[in-house]
Image (tube, rainbow, N blue to C red; front, side, top):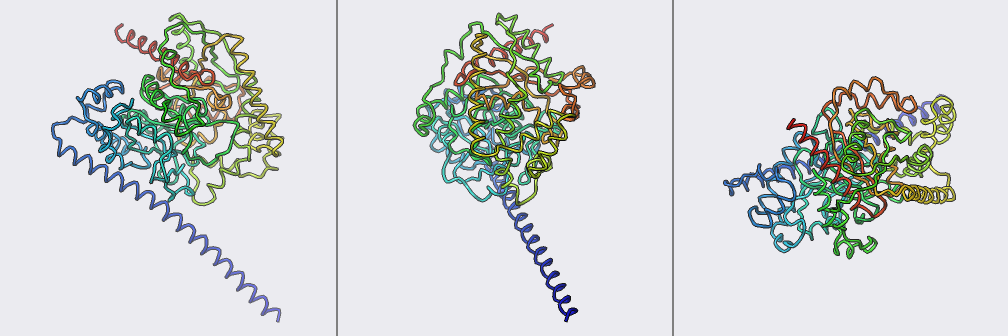
Length: 579
């Protein structure tokens, strides 16, 4: 009888094992089919776009499309308005260029074929500030009939039922959204790679990341495939790809531009605030986009957006400014090229008659860990991890997912053990344990408000108009971003403070900058500092930017400083060329 029971038990155990295996295999096949459907859909759209361009060129043999994509936005807009260029020619020129750039960089998630239909009605929007301008949008901006995937399987096969407010306003202003661009898996990473559409690479060097999470935008615009794009930013997601790819980007104050219709994997956070903003090749294009968006249509479609039109007078002012600056925030030591870019920009501004005043971010160690890191994962990463349960995890994210998925007790124990040796890493690990409950969450919200008021008081005491600070760079080697949350101290701080911040490319990494990396020790000399050197090594020739910051709701002042920096560096480069 015992032998019989054993045989039955073994048979049941084997059957259960086979059943589990078959269920997992079936789930794996289901995931594979879902991924393939998404990729096939994109390939079909790319093929349709190729045919549309070919057909247009056949019917309009005399039109030179290649010259159209070389025009600055202001000149392109003027030529469309005076009739010397037609919107259909401009759209097909940019679709053709975007397809070429996508083949090299892999920056598209969808071609919005409805853009061709939009041409039929374009004349009714002739008064719009962006009349006839093709524009690319980040994958997570809802466009009716298309997925906003955020790079995760859970959001596939779930097309938006209507346009986001941002897309609606763009259309009312005469712009033609024509392409959605690639993002990291889950958005909370600054390497642009996901298991659905793959990795987007940097147009300045295809062996480097283009940044993220608005990485597809950065790559497409820098590669010449778009003249203006829209991204979103919760820790540097507009600014990092702009800096890595050598273009301009602006993160406005939260809700200066409507967020209604922006998809996310971690909606609900109130500590580090997200913002939607423009990306372009020059500052004037950013300003034009802000002027167009901050219109009655925006304020009507989303009444939660304060009805504050763009202040052109502040933006165009030539009055000398009082500018705070810092080279090192005391948490994350800049690379040699970041420091040089900052100090040379400071010198140019001083020579131009602006007053430069030393400024230091307040309590940066505590602010970064307790407000930035803990604020982004107040739930210990549980909401984000829900989107990673099915399907593969991108290699660039494996460390982040591992940190979040590690048991809470284990994280606290590791943090305790590391504290005497690596205090910064210990504090970072402790931060991603999240908050303990509602009471602790409310306390954190209170601390954020107090920190904002302290920072504003410091600005007032120094009578600052704006602040100049380093911007992360150069572009990283692949698969390092998940190990480098410490590098976000220069960008993510301004999501917690909710200050507008923008980046302007000013210089490139020199051989001397590269050589000085061997002397880099960092502010703490820990593993994060050593990893940073490995991440940025081999960056000669890559773009380096600086960051400009203003007080909340003062995007025009932020752009004013960005424009001044852009102008002074252009003059410097022109002078060097002539000499």
